[in-house]
Image (tube, rainbow, N blue to C red; front, side, top):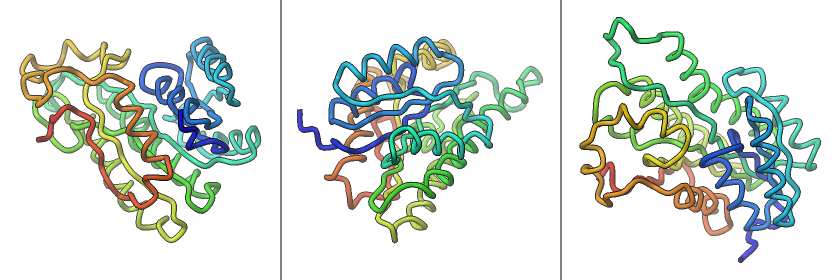
Amino acid sequence: MSMKLSGKVVLITGGSRGLGAATAAAFADQGADVAISYVASEGKAAAVVTGLEAKGVRAAAIQADQGDLTAAGPLMRRVVETFGKLDILVNNAAVAWQGRTIDDPEIDNAAMDRQWAINAMGVIANIRAASKVLPEGGRIISVGSGLGTRVAFPGTTDYAATKAAVVGYSRGAARDLGRRNITVNVVQAGVMDTDMAASSKDKLPPSLLESLAIRRYAEVNEVAAAIVFLAGPDAAYITGSIIDVSGGFIA
């Protein structure tokens, strides 16, 4: 265990389960103190905190709805008040509502708007708020999707567009914050065995697995490793970049 992030404080949104919880554990293994946010899963968030503290780091769970754009500022302030600072922001919280084409009369437009609020505008609000408290050399990593680059099947227009928006905003933020040596990057994850993926797997075409260069879905630890790498000292000169951890989905 290298402990390359000892003394750092990271905030991971949506950290009570799935990729968020795996990423929190991976940061703790590198010595970072970890804050996670959650919307409603208080019990799961508390269990994650207990597991992190068992690794010998400080940890806290903070309730915040990323779909509420006014929550970003208070969230960052809570982290700073609790840990004394914030070094790394990981935008992980997201939803995936797919399966209907945009001309389907049964499409739930309210759900699509909520998806935009969480996946795109919530991420933007977090980046704006974090940029005001991050120190020189801070890190911002957002979890994207291969669908933000390649929309390989119908019924995923709004989800794909939210992830593409995160890429564009992150590249712009990398330009704005580069003078402070704050890096801004995106990890585009492939389909993973998480609660969110389980709710949409039945809507994915059978040909998806065959389209991958590596014929299996991603493990959460593989995606978490890329996120932690971008937060570490070896990635200090990587910014405005997209790292795909999708088994060759866009190859």
